[in-house]
View (cartoon, rainbow, N blue to C red):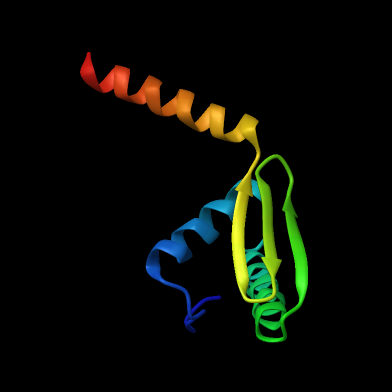
Length: 93
């Protein structure tokens, strides 16, 4: 993406760069996929569509008319809670 703006915050830029590095894909591809997903979500919400985005091993983003909710899978929630407990335990040592 070189010298032009992607319209993303600095934090989002860093996340995209890390994802690109881990997936061995160009950062521009990651940004394009995220922006395309957001456009579909914007279209669904602005036109009152019902749709679900399924994120493998993470959860489901549920869009119903103008209502949006993220439903996380229980395994992910447990893993995050466990890692937080581990991190807190290490910080207390």
